[in-house]
Image (cartoon, rainbow, N blue to C red; front, side, top):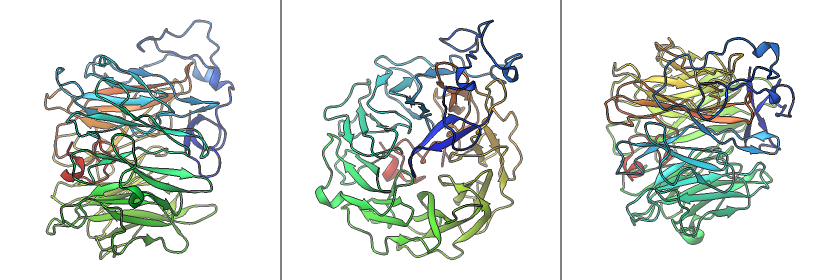
Length: 514
């Protein structure tokens, strides 16, 4: 079975659906009526003997081809808006919400709920929390009110640009903070970025809002829900936003900058909201930006960061050409860039910066749709051959040492399942060979999430969590699966957007420190 993304209205955000092509939504047909439930799934019954299951789905069900950590998977409520299944994207977050419990918790979201789960899969007291809107983007975590305790920031989206979205802020016990949720009369469909822009000890909440016609706004809020910085941080975007903002000290002056990507521009603003000199950088004629912008230290001999992004040729149909750009803090391209990666692409997922080969210098990892992963050096050279994945990718990859050899492997999502609904989480070495014991086989498709990693229990081994969704069970359902995999190493990119603040800035303490 294949799953697909469908666009709900022109350039609207993505919804997961069962389909025969890339434009047919889930409509209550034969596949939507399947009642295929595993007896091993916590909280649900087994497959009924008289269940109406088409022939292609009959036979023995092998539920999970490998052993998950005890207590997992954890079942979540589905996110359904009308006939569309708004499947959770981009994984989970990890944080110690309850210091009285050992280790970190897994914070995940789906439908109108946010979950905080212990390493044993059990929910914390007070969780799950109910939120406004549909929690399709992953949660962000940081201290937004300056009280020294973490808050969970969850975007709750609508379906189309004209639908109201909500920003939800929960305390560590799952209670809504004063002043929240905040209704936003247009679509917010990517995670919020958290950063302390004014140095007062409380993180601001940075979101990008889509509007109709396709454009949008950049908005920044204080921890109490009020606007941050007055008119200085009220900016109209030239086109619809692409990914969470990047935040880091780009020029080494001790103050944060905010970078964001739209179809037409790469823009960097100072902490006071003013444009940084040299920006915006406009896309070349015939090209559209796609993916994300990332701040990364590509040259460790300097005190500044560089920024990277990708563009694609603006083609009405047929394959596109993908280029990778890298620029300095002044917006000028670095020597060796742009780099042409592929002329047979269908798009680009969010970028990653990580020390893939363990030489101390970051490389840029570019997931080129439909099924290639490129690794590019800081000098603009393509490293080896592109990694060919087994199926179409839709999510950003993760880069983490799964084998303990000091080099990073690349995790990729997969938009297929076998006939019993078991999905695939892929992992590759940089030379393109598959990592031993992969793919992992959770129930449901991993499409939209390539996993998230952290050492939950402090035992020196990484846990790997992945969010999946199945259209073969009723009601439509999402899960979090968890395995013990890998040894802790420099975690340049173990989670979506680099860290739980969604800073898109690896190794950037100023952006990622709680």
